[in-house]
Image (cartoon, rainbow, N blue to C red; front, side, top):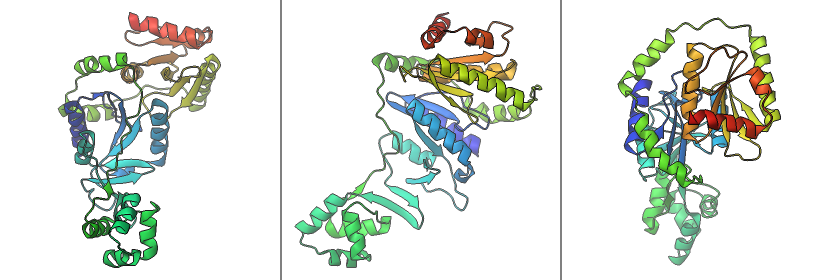
Amino acid sequence: MREVLLSECIQILYENNFVISKPSLDRSCFDLIARRGNTRLLIKVLKNIDSLSSQQSDELCKISSIVSATPIIIGSRTRNSTMEDEVVYERHHIKAVTSKTFENQITGQPPVVYADRGGFFVNIDGTVLKRTREQLNISVGELAEISRVSRKTIYKYEQNEANPSAEVAIKIEEYLDVPLVKGLHIIREDIEISSREKNTDSARNDNIKYDTNSIKNSELTKSHQTSQSHQNQSEEDSFKSNVLDLFSDLGFNVTETTRAPFDALGEDKENSKNLLFTNIQESSNEEVKRKALIVNEISQLFNSHSILILENKDMQYKRIAALSLKELEQMGDTEELLNFLKDKNKK
């Protein structure tokens, strides 16, 4: 079922002119990154939205904040019931919707109903409610009686301190004969993106194509792959910590990740638009190179950079910017590292 949802999501994004990353088929906090103009999305696809862990959600929110994207969950059911179309749910402060609701949202038809404890609710314009009630010379008591709520509750609606259930909102709208319900715009579109970035979106979309029918087979194949042996965890953590300290010394604000395809995300302290998606591994193998290529494509969606840091770099890497720990130590500052990455991208 999850594979079907993922395929549906990819199809919806393509049909609506989004540029998307390759699906992440491991236990990442997100499955897709999508971008269209000023809209950036980090999408997690789940059959049951209650299966999202607090660790995944925390990291998803953290990464979304850094890259100025909207985190969103696409699912089909909760622990107790099937999800309704045109209803917004929430898990760990992240909005969750069905694929149909998601499609309507990105085509300009935002949902108006949200699920909360006690049922389905809507946002209404309290100012319009109060003005219309007074213009029609309707008392608070009269409106409370027809809507079957207390006078105190009506006052809260008018002060935008509370929202009515969908049923109560319908009664009030019909009685006052005025629209009050407001759409729920769950995707932010306030990111400033240069014209150069916009012009490259369509070209990237042409270059990134996926066979959505193969997603299920790819995930099954990956689940049977055998990982190569690693050194013990304490040594790995020490190496990673050393690398993160070096990036910080170079002039990056560094955020470590544990549930993403990359191991760290760096922001240039002088220019937050310069992002650095980083993979950190003591040694290289096919799985490391596969992840590094995925992260490289992710960085391109944000017109940023990616890099693979290895304890010892024993070969040259095509399409991947890689440095040994010693080479990283020799970098003087942020500008020198970014210039290295720009030169690598030109080749």
